[in-house]
Amino acid sequence: MTTMIRTAAHDDLPALMALYTHLGRNNAERADLRAIETFARILEAPGMHLFLLEDNNAVTHSDARRRGFARVVLQHAVAFAWSAGCYKVMLMTGKADNVAFYEACGFDASEKHALIVRRPANA
Image 1 (tube, rainbow, N blue to C red):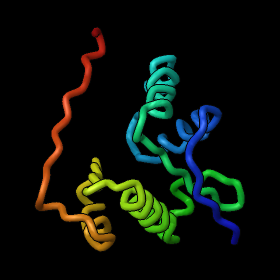
Image 2 (image 1 turned 135 degrees about the vertical axis):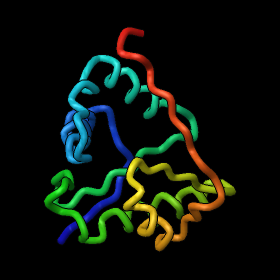
Image 3 (image 1 turned 60 degrees about the vertical axis):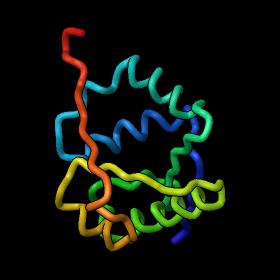
Image 4 (image 1 turned 90 degrees about the vertical axis):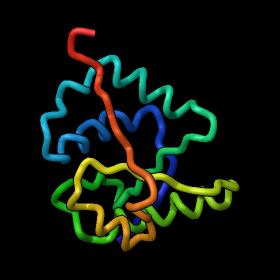
């Protein structure tokens, strides 16, 4: 198996949006112009890095879970942060079922908590 971790590029958005549908929620509404603009801002933001793991040049989706890809990407992101002089790495998840996995990767769920407010559909 050939794997490579790389930084995301602008032309990765369609594949990432397709991957996003594998979260198990209705996320189709995010595939719009706002997603393109937001993705561009993320890629251009100083100090912001979005890492992708390619497995034989295929985007990993729900059929490829539990093969260690998430752990590899997390380890890479944390090592990158330490080499860049960061003093902490923060991770947010929308699934409580994943917390034990992230703790096994070295994250501490008891230290910080994140809250989210979403833009109303009519705004």
